[in-house]
Picture (cartoon, rainbow, N blue to C red):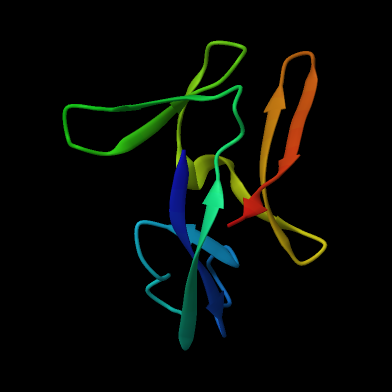
Length: 91
């Protein structure tokens, strides 16, 4: 599945990348599409928000996983047994 994310510029308090719209403190932003890694399942909660179920069974909002790693968008999570990391492929 592909989702639209935003690359935020001039944002001091927010993540470089965001899902659902530009960061509120961004000076400007660009939007583009990325693929969600296949090991995640997508579903909506009762509020209409897109959630991801991870391979280890935890549910996340996309912005909880979304980060920047060496200038590229990625998913990152800290687990009891270590961590999970995956670059997101732009489409």
